[in-house]
Image 1 (cartoon, each protein chain N blue to C red):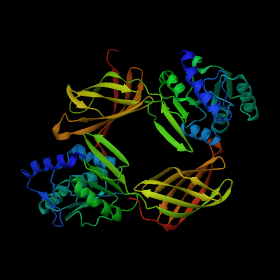
Image 2 (image 1 turned 120 degrees about the horizontal axis):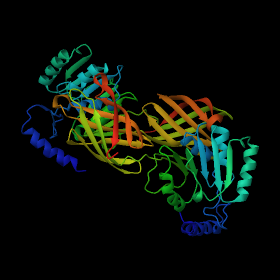
Image 3 (image 1 turned 45 degrees about the vertical axis):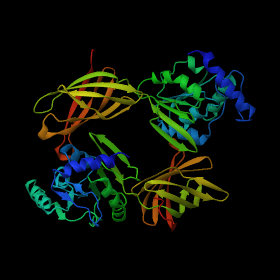
Image 4 (image 1 turned 30 degrees about the horizontal axis):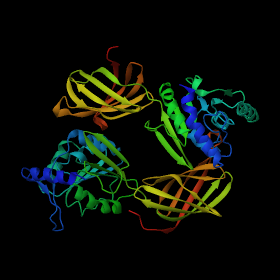
Length: 283
Length: 282
């Protein structure tokens, strides 16, 4: 990858001119993220890609002058929280929010994004350098609920394929926090041909899942397995009929509907899976 | 299309398949493609992938015993036409359609589909050899924009599928793209001044790229998508530095006119209006 070098060079140029720096911690010689405000088109695009709604809590990590959080409240009716290490920028953000008339729906906190608690966020926006983005990844996965959206501007996660990439002047990466589904499940379905019970197993790397069901004398691979937040879908083929499973993961339980058969012959029934054991994530 | 250019490789492959005892139904004689029935699960998946419904007219190229066309009629409410070069299979298909109670909605014709008119189809289905797919490609690209093509197992070379699913076997969906290559002009009634937007588009199948000029200033076109006759793309409007915003276009192409809806900006500050572009020189 070429961009760390390019980014470092760019940084060196910026460091020479930009005094306001959000310092990284731990005493390592890490490159701090300089304060580079997003353009208004970039702010628009991050919030559009995240599909922000009024019931969202948008947390901007490294919130600068507060423009993303303020736009989320002003343009989408969402609530917002900005976390920024520079106290002067925090003050400026609070003042900007007051001027924009959204002071009641947003807050700004002085703090280190690597120590911050943002577990209540439904949307997290990032415009940080690659090293800091990488360091944040385990914290984001540990704190955020499945289905939460992360939008990164310019720099995304190294080993996590975005759920969506948008290129409008710059790159925007959308990641939907996946539910943890890896492990063994007991799957019970009331299929049109009768009740079925399978030993169902899933392996997972971020939102990529694969697996299948064990049946007496065979194995049914889960085709077209997809995971988006807490929504899971896959297809099991048995007795020359395709069964399209869709469900919602809620901790140790998945519940949903199965559509069996083609076109007008399609029958819809219910299914449920309960966790038997978990296995560690692949990545 | 010359028949002799395609029979040789197909015959060789058919002979090879027959020599290995695979597949059971393969017959050599004078067939372009050996007769290998598509499993019912795959027939179902092809029709689901194409979202076949009661408004569709499905043409199956190499219809074998008629199962795809019959399933389209019986389970998806469509009308259908199956073409096969084997007269015995055509007779068998007609009998199967009668037994399935869909004889009034489907037809079978003993025909070389390279010589047939398939322009009335809204959905084309096929399970043919790769070489035959490639010979068919120019014909398929000439179908009405929006026509869906579903193939089982084999793709269409460097025309990428719009969707692909794997349920036991690979199934591919293509949507015949409209022709958008060329120069287009439009006037946008954006305050405070009307903008003139010129597009210069190049196209390879459904993949479109190009350049734009907004009031004469070169700018880029982002995120262009083309699905049948539906287009969408984004141009960043930086005419007023203090009020930059993206212009999100969605619309339809009909011949030399492209028109639809345009959204400037996002969220509560966005504004929506109509747009209409005309191909240059028309």
